[in-house]
Length: 47
Image (cartoon, rainbow, N blue to C red; front, side, top):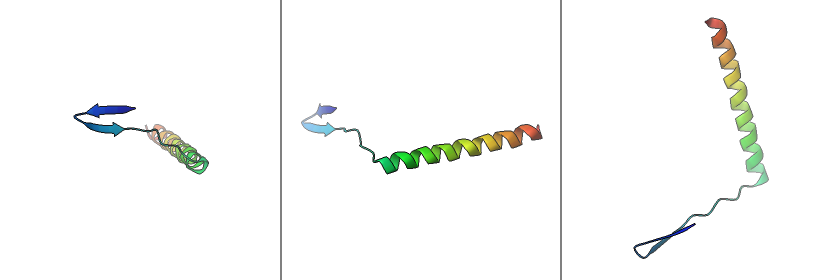
């Protein structure tokens, strides 16, 4: 996407991610979801 504003050009490109970055993101998301579920379990028992 390119915007021309007052003789300035701003170009925004979608960043290409490597396979390793995608795998890392997946593992982080999985870890986050596991912890969220554990916390939910613990707190639901307390109530």
